[in-house]
Length: 72
Image (cartoon, rainbow, N blue to C red; front, side, top):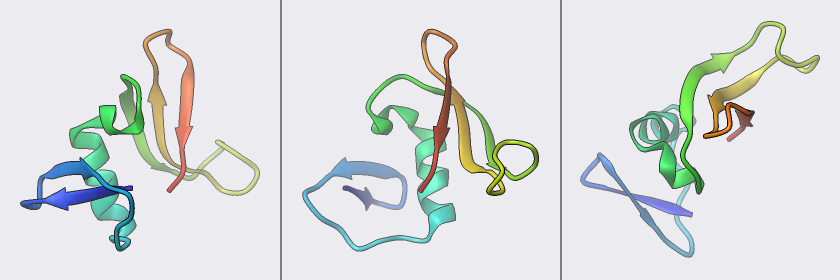
């Protein structure tokens, strides 16, 4: 879990209260490394033609140009 500090930084914690999804997405976009590896965010809230179930929260590429789907 990550805690939001000063409205702009993520600090790793054991537990935390959940924030609104769009707030978490904004923070991840500002520092994608909080997901555990270097990522390039290339899309958010992709809803068309990604999956049969309607889409993903974030679409990213890793250092090897492998597509990474992020769901919150």
